[in-house]
Image 1 (cartoon, rainbow, N blue to C red):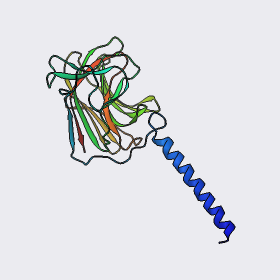
Image 2 (spheres, helix red, strand yellow):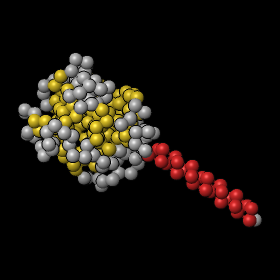
Image 3 (cartoon, one colour):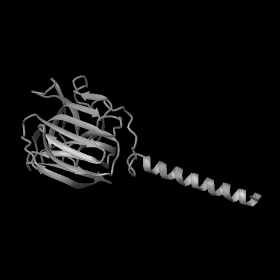
Image 4 (cartoon, helix red, strand yellow):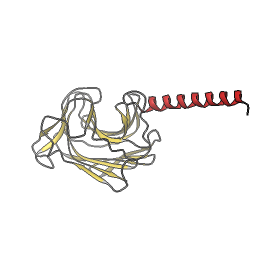
Length: 227
């Protein structure tokens, strides 16, 4: 290889490295393009439980990140783990919250949920494989519609990938569970499989909670299990 050839090769390699660096930076900056999570940060079998009973009332739970809505811990009569629950009382297109920074691949997210009120919607949802505020999977039930749905949320746009009938009753605590195993997603209400789908958009990510529009909804005893 001549000196000129070596110089040109070096310049080309530097340009490639620079382009790759820019692509990685853009892909991973939160709030912009999709953050790419493909490796879990926790071992299979690890279990985390959120009861919100040691978190101060009127604030977000420790480590949580709100993407939209008005989320706060509050004393809630009849909470499955007394005295507190985490409630969403504001209005937004899709109120959503990440519960922490832990990244899960295969995961089971379960929670006690209570739809309290809402003229437009009375929804309770769980999130899996959150990349950022615009990219994640949603498993939700709706008391006004009497159904349950699985959604893929990409680039701030929601696409339904499956659905079924499931009775979420306003004013009553119920069990909601979202499972993500590989490309398989399953949604359960009170222990009954309501709907399932196959989707390969997201391989790993954080977990969280979700409502819709003017829903006032409370969550308690959230359990996250790395599968």
